Length: 371
Image (cartoon, rainbow, N blue to C red; front, side):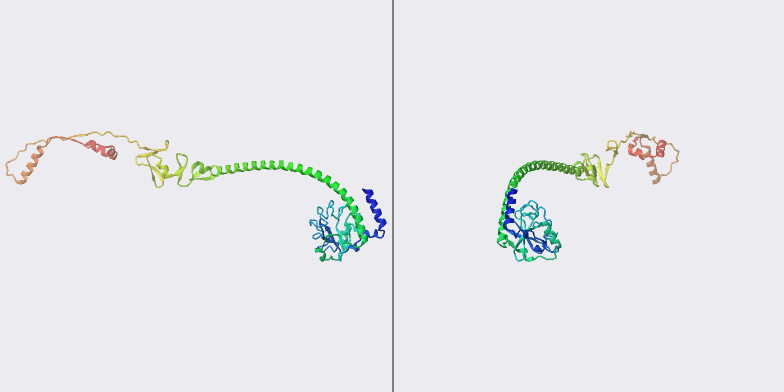
């Protein structure tokens, strides 16, 4: 392959002796001119070799010379800046590197590192020219496109023919390399797909485990949040995690639920509500041991009948002189006779109940003894 290339170059030099010196361009021959790149179907404007302040300059780092702009020759992974692209200004074997067009739309040469493309200016030299240039490129060229490279003369046409032959030879080698690269790339892609499949399955499993764990955490949190309500009913409140209390006006009932005080009293025997407090009924007292109201124990007093005997009234004979009885004396005599006629009888004293016993004072008891 190299022998063929060198043979063609020797033929070119012999046929075009006057053009060999023109194959090398300098800054003055390209100053202010525009560069065009091949996008696969046509040549489009990609910059200019001009004043770096101008946005069209390939030396303007935020304009046509930006490292991130897709059409910039300074983009290392772009079509026109990559070392492997056939349209790049930095590919030493590029078949269609960017071209330089004058303001009157004439082809001037290539901007490339490919020494076999002539006439041309080395890409690094062209960038240096742009940085030192004081000439502003024409904005009118920005909207221009070319389907083919503009022709200048017959010599240029012959030069292009030779260049195309070299390019075709390089293309054959490039195609071989491309076929080989495609083969290994296909193998790599298949392997990557298998890895991605395994990774996706692992990711799905991990997501499922994470979702299950999150659900358990949420369920546990719900149990903690609702612990008091689930355990002691809706009338309970949470003081702190795991620590509960009944709401104001509620107490723990028999079923270990928070119930109102009135309901709590209703479940106890012999109780009633009084001033918001559960109290024992009359005759009952609270037993702290059994926590219930029990009936009061009262010692019963023995009721005894006391017999009180009245002595009969004795008749005492009195000496009286007969006198005329007045009506008053007659009445008195009648009363006295009625008293003499009262027969002795027994009278039962009223029974003494425990209540009356309690009411008697000590001096009353002594008084009763003397009776």
